[in-house]
Length: 169
Image (cartoon, rainbow, N blue to C red):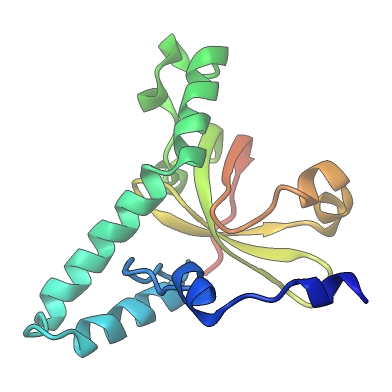
């Protein structure tokens, strides 16, 4: 007799183990999550919200999810602990909004919202901080480094030092 043949259970034991939970559905991360949330808004039992009100709620929830995440909080603690900015306060970190007026930013902290290959071995990134969202490129040499490539994922927080930018028109 095989060992798996001893695993005979009654249906009532299995039903109590496999009961469906009543938890609400988790949202898909990224832009697909906004579509999922829109469908959930329209299929609910109560009266659906207006488009403007719903869009405002989605934006607020996205902000809360991004900037109250463990990754963001750990980045704040890391910066304050190591004194990487003036006075050791996280509020003194450069924002992406400042990139429009400065050529080089000493320190930028942002969340990786989207990453996709560009077909040439590089990666196109969408970065977000509390003030703005910006596109960026990651060179293939960075992707070939095992320490960097293993940590590039949507939702991760990136601390960038001496960031220069180009404005393409």
